[in-house]
Length: 413
Image (cartoon, rainbow, N blue to C red; front, side, top):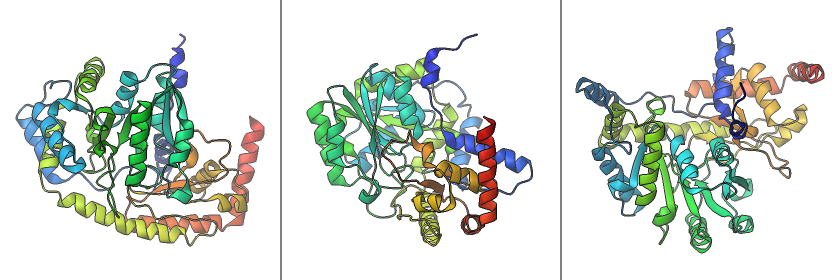
């Protein structure tokens, strides 16, 4: 039977493809250090797990309202109001299973076929995927290394047309760890007001910041009415598998997104909402300790990467990813791009990383190569991964063996 044509517009999150490859190699007995997946390695705090157990014991196993438990929406509203400096009502909050549904629902609710959505490149791959799936035109805006991987507002101006319906901002940013300065956000806000487009502000890493503060575009006059804030518990509270996220948006849009929840998921699991509410109301020391550990891991991995010939890595100021420029290393060793380096490091070096192709369709004028390394693993794993990367790249015989294998595969196609 033939599948719907719209599925051809649907992308994927290649980090999970790499994870599947890692698991298969491990099943074969290979020792692989995975710096590819974007989730904290630490476990969910006990007080959160205990809250989930209590909720189960009290039989919170039935449906909740599609927009979320009222008490939880109220807790989220107070938290967002205090951290972003804006008034928020519970009716402006929608709880969803993870962060992705907010991306999906925002596209379905706000963007018509043929509209244009500007998104960061590199960026979280689901942005581009959902824009295309909704039938809109994906308009990439390159984040430039020389600007600390922030937007060039002048370049943004040149991308805006009468069809621009939305811009996506992500700060702190995946995969680069960059933060958009407050002044740049202010200028983006002014463009949104002038040209009347939505802003989807992905703030999922807002608590994981090492220097300065991650500002929200929603704080500027007139922006609360046209901003969709995406946040959640996966990164901050090490709750990736719990699937709890939320969006904060104008009330009329929240009602429509809740209706999309009714039609798709019915609701987010009730007992996980109780656990997530406990996470926000409980002690925050575990979050502070996690960020402190990430800061030490960041310094370790960035310093180590910059000692590898052909690598140059800026120090990220948020999230938990290093994004070194490996252009010179690719050219020195004969790799055609970062994807080929990714494969080499996995199969010959025993280290899983992600090439830049995992973060959006590469623009033709982009002649630089990058890889992303998640530094949530142990100090020991990071040190060993750095050693393996340098050792394998310095082994010319191993590199040539890999390139020969790649050429043989290409000829066999």
